[in-house]
Length: 315
Image 1 (cartoon, rainbow, N blue to C red):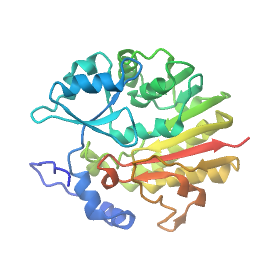
Image 2 (image 1 turned 45 degrees about the vertical axis):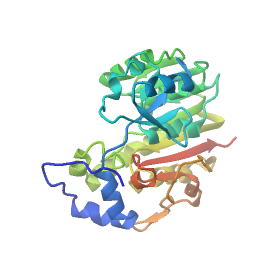
Image 3 (image 1 turned 45 degrees about the horizontal axis):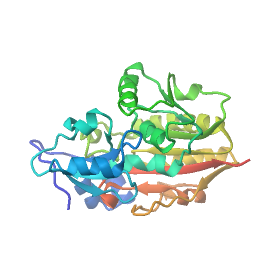
């Protein structure tokens, strides 16, 4: 059982939130994990080092590394007396990237190859961009885009620290991409973050139905733009750290209904526990293809909650 977060104030969920999530999942389990510490995790950057070498140097400092089953470069990291993973020398020189274990999933499902032309549509702070660059051995090209200049600061710093050289940073709204032909696209969409309550308790306070509706509208614009910039035969990932059906299954359903040449691909990652996608909720039914996507609740793997759909553009 995960360790509960101590709090000086009573954490209250809104009645509408409790009612909603009691219908979607095991409420008590979801609440327990959402109010528990999130295990720290790292990804070893193979552009700079090897997994074997860096695992050895970190463990020699007294840190314990437990393999993340679905990512061979990923480890949960802990220490009997310390929590400051960011102070490790290996972090400063780019040998490791501090990245949540569930966040590693979208690039692994997309599988960008050396030489691919890839778009990371909402890239900051760069955890998935740097992961894809490593998967591509710094070849091909990644366009790493975000819509706020301030967000590009962390993206640029992380790309430099990770010795990424195949990436071009762009600044614009994702909806403005037009007439490109990318091999692969990662759309890790801006979302409500309801899968990350354990990292940001304010999510509980700001949650409301109107916010979800507004975000879903933007997410539909982004997924349609991404699909239109994908070359025939190309593949894209739509992912969020939300567990709201309107932001996940509902967005993919919108795309499938509008584009008959969109197909949701079956995804299996060994070692990853998943829950059934939501095909019907609150009187709304979703396309049966969506059963091929990944829905991950915090209690499934003791991680953040996540949703991942792999979509192919048929020729």
